[in-house]
Length: 145
Image 1 (spheres, helix red, strand yellow):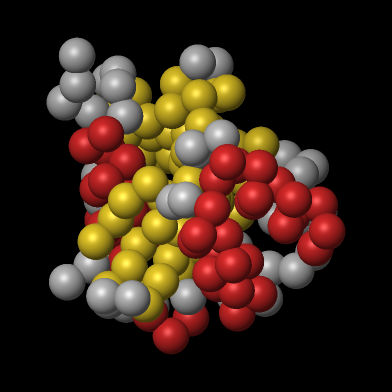
Image 2 (tube, rainbow, N blue to C red; image 1 turned 120 degrees about the vertical axis):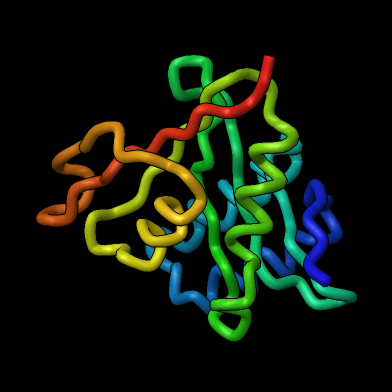
């Protein structure tokens, strides 16, 4: 059974390992420091099954004051097992307010499919972050306050 909970400093090594296994090494020093800092600021979530860490998410409220899923990364060996859905469901259940946002590159069809199956709708596009690969913003109305 997949369990999602707030990540702690004990999870940092596993989060960095999941990132590396996914091939997310660009800006490695900065990215590693960013991940560590996000966990320390209690913005990180970890998905696990028993003692195995399967994926993580980072959520902040710097997107016009709304919760924003900045990163959602599933270990390649744990894909297609509901890890991404479990992370999103946890965020949706625990974030205050009525709106939740996230984004993904236009080239990331797997994430777009997950978001659309989870009830998110396209809400805009940001050009020029990654050359030739626009960032698609997604939105979901929550049954919140």
